[in-house]
Image 1 (tube, rainbow, N blue to C red):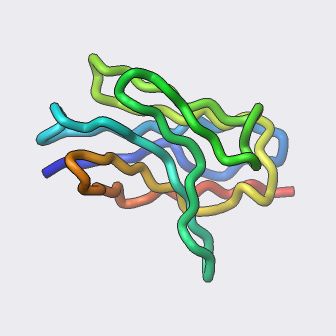
Image 2 (image 1 turned 90 degrees about the vertical axis):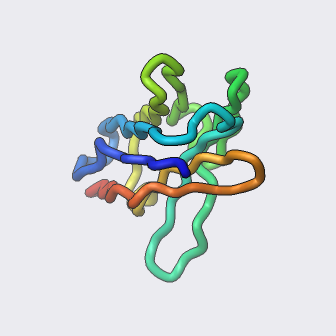
Length: 115
């Protein structure tokens, strides 16, 4: 089992920044990919950004150039630096870890961007 604990969400004005953190614990030795997803009311959960164990990254088109995903392997933590936030970025953000074909999810953290 993998446990994920997210932090760093909150309320920010448009144009502002937030950094989300996701700390992984448990059976983390075979995690090959971690990522951030977001979901709003009545919408499907969508990929925001993901990073592999060797550092390769992928971003949703809507966040390219504004968000940066990174990982600190020594701390078993993944970060999402979000700059130039827009009201459309308002959602619940979920951390995910993928291991041996299974997906593990955090509890979610609310990000609200006011106009």
